[in-house]
Every structure is written in C-alpha cells, then in structure tokens.
Image 1 (cartoon, rainbow, N blue to C red):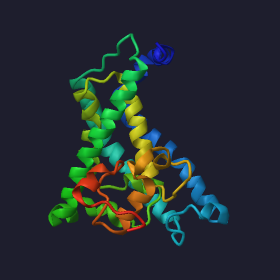
Image 2: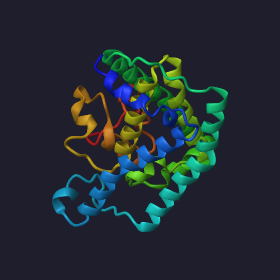
Image 3: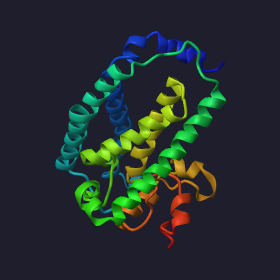
Image 4: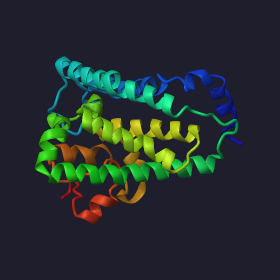
Length: 252
C-alpha cells in the first residue's frame, strides 16, 4: 500500500494526532502556512512589475492595519470558538486511529467527494446569505469588507460563517466514512483552495489552470464575486453557478 509508510510515520505521533488541541492548532498553522507564499508575493509584486501583471486588481495594495485586522480575526475565531469546540468534541467522541492506511485510489476518490459535497453546501449557504438581506447584513457582510482580496481575507469572517462552514467541512469526511488520513488530506486541500481563491492573483500554475473545460473557477472566479456580489457563489467549481445562472467570467 503506497500510503502505509506515511501513515506509519504519523502513527508514531499518535498522541499528538489524538490531542484535543490538534484540530485547532492544525487548522491555524496550515492556514498561515498556505498564506505565507502569497503574502511574500504581495511584498514582491509591489516592487516587481513582472509579478504585478498577475495581480487581479493591480491598483489595490495591502496595509499593515489590514494584515493586523485579519490576523486578529483569525486568532480570535480559533482561540475563542474552534479550540473549545474541538476540545469538547474530542471528549465526546475520542479519536481512534486504525493501523492500516487507506488505498490511494480510495483516498483520492473520497477527497474529491468531500470537496464536491462541500462545494454544494457552500454554494447553497452562500446563495441564501446573499438573497436574504437579513442573513447577509447579520452574518455574511463581514467577509465582504474587502472587495480586493488577499490570502489572509479567506478567514476574515464572523463567528456564524466560520462555524457553519467549519461544520460542513468536518462533517463530510464523517458522513462518507473516511479514514483519518483522508480527512487530513481533505482539510489540507480545502484550506489551500480557500486561500488560493482569495489570494488576488491569477497565476499560470493555479488550480483552475490545471482543471480543464472551465470546471473550476479559481481566484479570478472568486475575485469577481467580491467585486459583484450577485455572481459566482460556489467556492471552487463552476457547475452550480452555471446551473443557477449566476456564473460570470471576465468576458461577460
């Protein structure tokens, strides 16, 4: 089994993986690590025109005040809400780690299934929070503080939005009966794609360039949503927006 050596290595740190602190620390550290390359790109693109050509909104700039505000929101949500909830969950439902790793085809299939399910849930949630004025003003408006996004704005959200989307992400692997390694892989991918969506750059090696037929939106897709809140509600793929008539591209 291709994944067994990796899983055996992780089992050597079973006490860490089973720690009630692990989910919150993992989520926060992965998010910040995913943001770092794009923050470095922001720093360099302000000086290099070659990099600035990939910036979706070339006129926009990032202030230290904005960085501090986003960091404060992220830390607040993780320490005040995510950490206590994950500690409570670990005592109510202790983690059990199997000895065997999942087959690679099963891991890849289930990660894709989790991602597609999360994409549908997020699309429905997002659409409702834009169509119902009270929901938008009460909960989702915070995330639209920035019309020009950058990596850290991916988690600039109110408590309700952060918790509800977090529940979707956490519940899907459980619903599909995923192996803990599959669950970790999905969380890693989901956090990365969320950061990439908000990075503010249309890079030639970005995920949407690797998926054919325009099936995946990417940063340009989501940037248009922050500029025009009446389109592009799905976080990743484009099929739900296409079916709902809410898909917009730069060409339209």
